[in-house]
Image 1: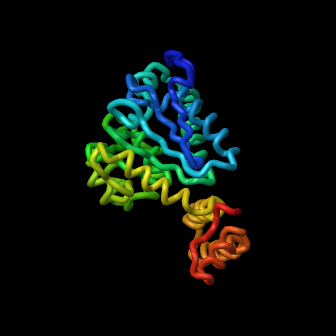
Image 2: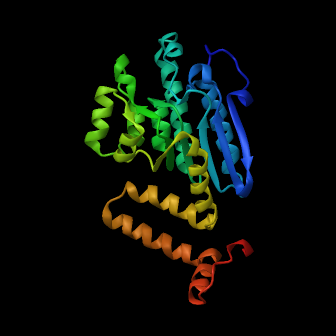
Length: 267
């Protein structure tokens, strides 16, 4: 967006393609604590559009360079643009990125080292899975500056109990990594030197499974979350029936019956 110092998008967002269809995206603006400004969001949205079209993609990892995973939006830049239209454009752009994570047919994993605040905490909550170092800290801290973290509250209340989410939103206070784990915001917490290995173990467990099954499962899980119980069961039953018609599930069933490992790599 206008008002930011220009920086090449390929420098703001580092893309590393790893074996077995895994891509790591690293927020690379440490001087601004990897803030989700217009350029960063533009780079992320463009990259997710590319990833969504990649049939070989199996998992995405999001990390941050420097002392912060992501400190949310740049308040200094926001203060310099006191126009409603400018704010509407920024938050709409951020919402497009969060929805791109939601809609990607493969799991997105947050690899968190350092602070994750406001929209940065929103990013952790929006990712399908999250692993953090034991020194990471989390807050939806907008209220400290007179701004209730409304958009971060959307995925936050879908991860942590309502009263805990409300406490975080009303106080803006930090949670330690262990507190965030207990609240349900994280899957795992490990010492910083074990963070890469912990994320890799999670990735390995995912890519060992059929892509089509995971894609159907992710779509179903989020769709039924918004439904009543009866409608959720109807959609889940239909999804499982369709999933069973996939070659991957047929191979899995045959492997179980024949007491052998599935040969999904042959599909």
